[in-house]
Amino acid sequence: MAQYDVFTNPSRIGSDSIPYVVVVQSDVLDGLATRLTIPLSLLDASVKVPTALCPVILVKGQRLCALAHYAAPLLAKALRRPVDNVASQASALVSALDAVLSGI
Image (cartoon, rainbow, N blue to C red):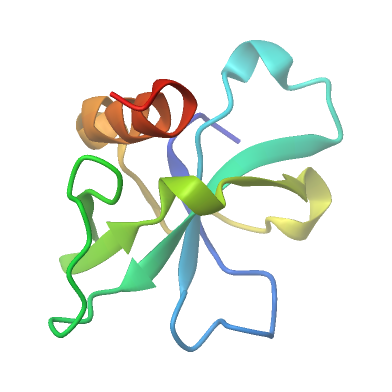
């Protein structure tokens, strides 16, 4: 699996509102059993979120909100087949992680 591959959310709980996760972990760490992921949530127009923390990411033509503050490791074996790769949007994801880690 490659960095920025998008997978169907392997968790049954919450998959209605969070249909996908994106792997943000470097390919250098492929030997680990887990992958650091960011959940990709359906956009809710009624909820205001800071775009620096929760950028909009396009997956298969669908606009989703990356919830960087919910980044979590998932077992690599739970991530089956990628449905997309969002490497072209990597800078938004990295900036969101920077916002979580450094507040900027």
